[in-house]
Length: 195
Image (spheres, rainbow, N blue to C red):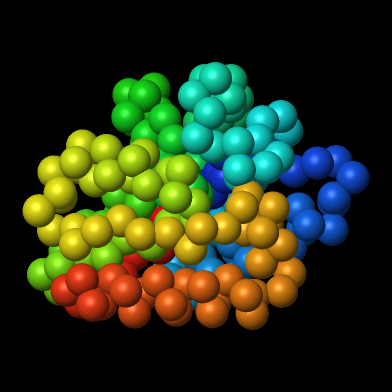
């Protein structure tokens, strides 16, 4: 019997950008379809209210409000018969509170990615999008007990809008990521995790 998994991205999309909302949904579904079991059903959700600019992420005041929206959306999904919930954001937003509130598995993509990376190599390079979020990811890595596995957290030094634009045209972000990936490899990383 197949499983139903909800995939929840903890950000919103400006209502005027419905086309971008569909692009994000299609990318997420396409990527998760590659790794799911054949009889598993995936449903992707964005928040109705919350971040519309990834560049707001490092402001704690916005995170409080956004995480409340995420929490409420996840509770709504909890009651819709899903077998698991995936938080589709490298920040693993509200992962522990959601695990406490839900009676099914809740997976954070960063935690899962880092733990998988420990099985693939001995040193991990973490590449994020902005210098401003490096401390957040350094703290997250430490909270997961993986500080000694990370060579360094580096960034592509992109704005939130550049990150969103990269969903439509990937050329610039791929070049930036490749450049930073080479720096991580020079640091000693043998596995890379995007964040």
